[in-house]
Length: 506
Image (cartoon, rainbow, N blue to C red):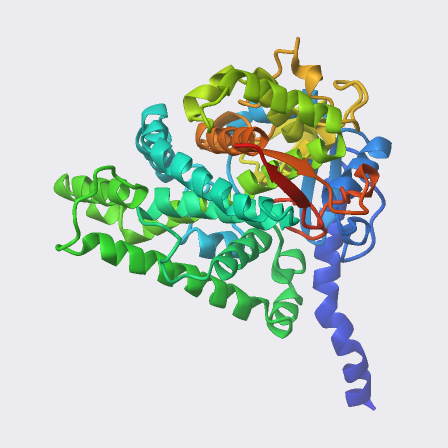
């Protein structure tokens, strides 16, 4: 009888300390002046309310609970920022207090144990790698040195599309633009052409998409510390993580080995691996070999590929979709570029400085369709206040750039695509205007702004200059699907491919 009694009470005795600890934690947090928070369910918190498009779900919740809102996502407390004023407090006023990154499993793997610039925590190493990237990789001079690559790849894109234009055949412009950004990034990073490299273009893009998706989501073990690891194991997430990482790591190692080949012909222009290998040698000469190794090089390459392939293509696809949906805007953009370029036959990078309406189109696309809808999560390092609410160390802060771009407080008719709104508007995307946070702001702002926008403007200008664009037979402007692709990911692309009929003019 005594044994039966013990067996009945033993589970409760084991669980009781955990329940008491949870109650103590809840009591401690409830006594603080935290941001408003929607009611939550036990264990999962508000995960069930995020939906397939989390940035949109958060936007709807913010309308009820405010632009500074606390969401309990499993075991993770995340502060969601949905206004320019609150974003300014986070990214400028209290930038130093919350400019670190959370130590997430996928981030650790793909950043080679936090050796990159985007995902590494704030500290001495991050400051050093950021300095290297700003001074060596993303300077205006360095970006200009890759001009011939961008112009050659855009010319190849135009030639490829011209083949279909001869037969007035619809093309998958989404696929073409993803291939373009992949090819440009490949050549800038590796110094060799993607074409004829033996790599499968479609597979390469799929791997990049998988990495972006995994970094943009949590492991179950992070959301549910006690049972999540079992879920991750049964869902094969760990195996997927290992497979995708190995595939990219093998690619990086192969190309680094090619650069180290003593018989390799010295290139006229340094590619990014050349630059990083030079930095490694220089640091070794000063006794800092352990501080910068091949893993550091691969981590930086990972950042460049994730930022370079997805975001640029996504922006161009949305821009062309909006112009196809608005023929008046398409004609206005084409008239500008054709009147300026005349009979030159192509648009060069120096020409884009004079295409002011094109730049407005890019800005409006960034506003309405930011490729990164939720800026990368920040982890707080000290206590501070946002809009009067207490924010504590080890909380996550995430800025909803998509919601801010649609806020009627800053934008008239925010759901409409109106490039002209930037005609007498000084708002820009370079991190000083918090109404438009395409590339973030503050210490963790994206260092590759100039490289990204240069590619986007050049490609769009040539597409508008060289071709007229029609919808496939039987399709009307209102039939263009402008839905976003569902899923937890760093980037948010158009749900369906953009198919248009090119008509070549030159």
